[in-house]
Image (cartoon, rainbow, N blue to C red; front, side, top):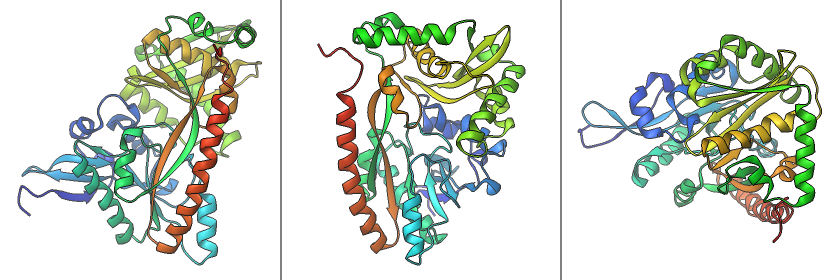
Length: 379
């Protein structure tokens, strides 16, 4: 192959690729596609053959030294856990018809329902090469389909032009409209909602001390405490936690300056905590847990303290994770999210396309309905 021709291949892991070249493609705005975050998942055993998330990044290389020109975080999946865009019904329908839905290809950040780039490419041409490579990988490894989840809006057209099917969903994000304080944000709400939030915050904070920890302030004992919180939530939500204990240690070692822990202390002992990841323009709320129940404490640590932190840092928004209509009354607004899907079997692809068209209509109506019911003043 000549030096002018790109080389397209799969790699055994993100960690097997050059860090500087991967991060040059990933940029600095979204921490979840960074080399440090993705390799922390790999090196901690949170993803790998035993988890049903087998790393298989797809890359485009150029030049005599095969430098990365484009890349795609991708995983061979043997189940649909940890994705937050639910396709269990698709799997069931395909298998009842005699097909094998698993394994499939997942283009995503594992366990992370946060919008971000999935095609790490400088040009539309390289983005198209990545998408065609993903389709080839499906055929070569006998995978039923490829799914890119929580794609950033700027990349929607690239998937659509390549013939991938788009799926919409809803999350709740807080938008910073130039607020210089939490009170300034409350001033944009109706009087009744403003009073309700103040009461919630007062009740949640009573008898507790709230601390924000980032960078060197995060010590091993903080990760020990947060591991307890995370295990509690993980056991109740998913049956078992997705991340290993080692993952938190590695995140602390590799990207502590991009981590914000919000802890609640009672008599000097941490009883609850929320983990946020700091992006270039966005604060991403990720995990929460507690060892003692306190009324409204979840809302305080995950939503209100996140707003405080975003305002303090001059960030444009807070993405508070998947689902959660209760966020609406707390100033988080409905935002459309997108995923893209390629299915090998023509008949099944046609059936899914019909389903998605009808689903998009329903999602659009739901979003419009909820947008009319935000707590903001109508004047």
